[in-house]
Length: 132
Image (cartoon, rainbow, N blue to C red; front, side, top):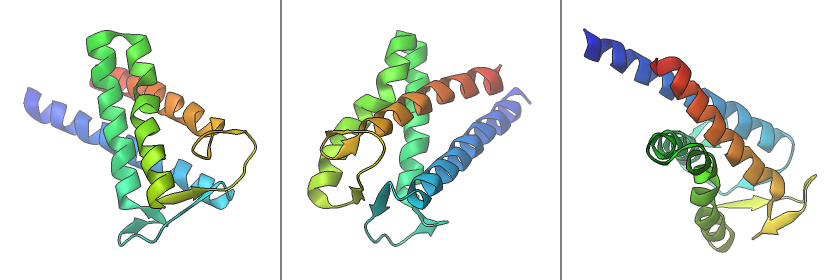
């Protein structure tokens, strides 16, 4: 019974992470902040791999928070995203279009890193709320 209840809560956390990823990524695409290279699987024009990336960052942020505290949990998203931005820039996975904030790392704007701080914070708060 307890295991079933935890499974439902974990599923809810994943649904929230997935929905957030789709909504925020669609907003970025619609605002012309970036474009993705062709991918085989999309959900509302968001590559499935990007959605999985967000969900993974959410879970890792929670784990880092639980093990090392708030600061580690908050910077987890940015730490994970830095090498991915480097790879994306060189492999053409996505292209940033000049936006409202300056580009600070391989054409990724400052706003991108603020989003990942927010993803980590949101993930921690969602986990804290749902899993209690």
